[in-house]
Length: 198
Image (cartoon, rainbow, N blue to C red; front, side, top):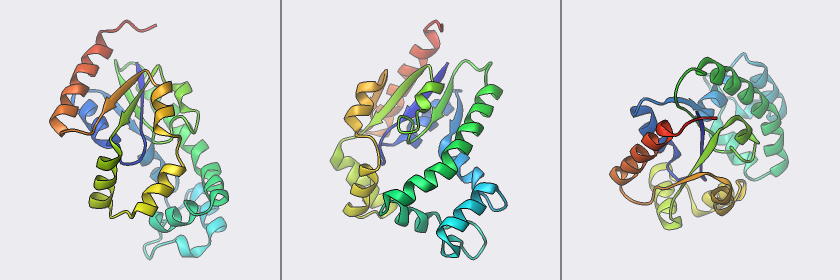
């Protein structure tokens, strides 16, 4: 079974994915693939530097992800161009890895922009991780040093959480303790493995 896992920024997708991994699920993380496809020397790296200019390259030659994020979340046109360069290459790697894991009982495909990129087509079911807004704000300010304006800009670039919930088969509320979330994941993991697959 391929379970797509998504959620808005600050919802705790990474933690929920790690819980599934600890239970033995195979995991594919789109964010890791996005870093892989834009590594120095790749075609995507060259296209990004050509489009944004040398100011987005750090001293060690890698891309300055913070600077690129600052630009694209302030400019929808630049964000679309970055997505045009990166998303098809990430999708290709996702499909390659899904083929590699095809005999595994459960594969979790963690994609922040799962619905926005149409990646639900790769999945048998989708899980959305949600969080109370106040908890989201506190976590993002504490853990990532994001301002309220940064948080608002990131959320504005994503599908509204309520729409993701409406379209998903499963929802986990990650507003409480980590142990409570871990228990919820454990229950869902057992349920998914017990369900017959088409």
